[in-house]
Image (tube, rainbow, N blue to C red; front, side, top):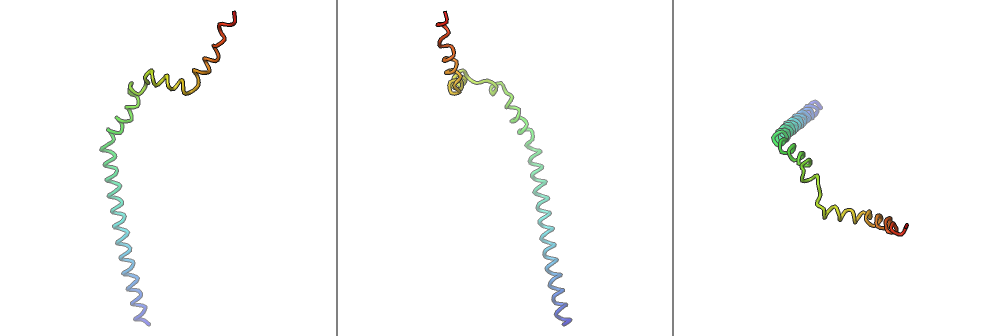
Length: 92
């Protein structure tokens, strides 16, 4: 009986050692990946800031007259205005 319990204890110790090694490798790998991602993020930060500032560029602030006209016509404002002022000259 003592031989069997020693054998089980040895198997449990080996299993624990293997599991501990797997955990330590996983955490090391996760730490390295996190540090790499952080380094990449810091290295490309200037590009990301410049891209976000492009939204305030004057080219993005204004639309062409053609696109504005298309938007006004599609929204129905032009038709509503036309219907509103249609009888203005008949009030005399």
